[in-house]
Length: 479
Image (cartoon, rainbow, N blue to C red; front, side, top):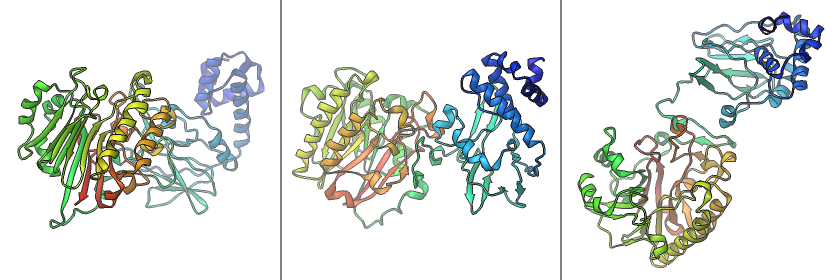
């Protein structure tokens, strides 16, 4: 028997069932091709593949007497699913293996054969019927949960569609999902590899409170890791003036400016009018690295640069300004680095020194700490928690240090207080295009003293502002 014929023709499967020795003589690669062709899992050792093909062949014979009603085809693309044994569908869905892309979207996917080039959404499930006038197909009694996505592999010119399903009463309802939805606002797409019940995606259009009345005294602060201020200002798509006009902030805190002291005056003049008070600190140990700044239209009482310790202050990571009712500290916390080479320094020296510095300030006034704090504190703050346990920014050491040195010492994470079950990211790596799929981290914060936490009117994220691998965050504080 020709191998190609066995893969193309289901009759070949029955022929193999009658002569199992043919399977034993096939190579593992040939067996895997055959299993993929008929739509069953293709992982495992040779004996597992042989067993799976024998089981499939026997099942096909049992299914020859069964019939199914076809689902009517809608104008949109459809999926074609094989006939399945309803009584064992739940068990098979749990046992099925998934690809890495599937895992990254934290979904349980049943086996769905690939459809080459066709963008049709057709479900052929045993004893299924179609609901007229709607975009749903109702199938007989099930307890099956299938959450899925669309994967587009441009290199192979194929589109795989997987259904999104849920139980309503005693019927399985398969929703026809438009894959292009939210493509212009990817941050509104819920993306998490280990989602928990009740978690939802952050949407600033629907989750921000109404603005305060004009007679309510308040201050609005923005914070942004710009990942190179010179590069940002050169972008035609970005306008510092438009950002100021749109958000009407009182204070703007910048991190990772990457400029040198000799460039400060030139850049200061090129930003925007009306913000006459700006305070810059630059790295002197490594030029064109790190750097922070506070730009304000309100003149502060005092300004301080760094932590007052030479070992920590050579990289331009901290600026503190004092206003009437609080201190505002803009920080760019050191990244633990590749291979976690700076992890010990970060958790044992920097975090503890900064924490003690904040407690000293609190003796006279409440504090607001903002900036890129380089830690996704909880699993809700990172798309892929399991895959980043030893990645800088999500190690157990950094997360524990964040809790011990800041949250346990009286500071409040304002965004998490306002949105306890919301998945909102502030950083998306360039390397894998994480922003388009909303696979990110929440590394940027406004932490405030407990004494003023109830004065926070809004703690928000501005994910639509481009120009950096981070987006701005904001705080509105009633005075």
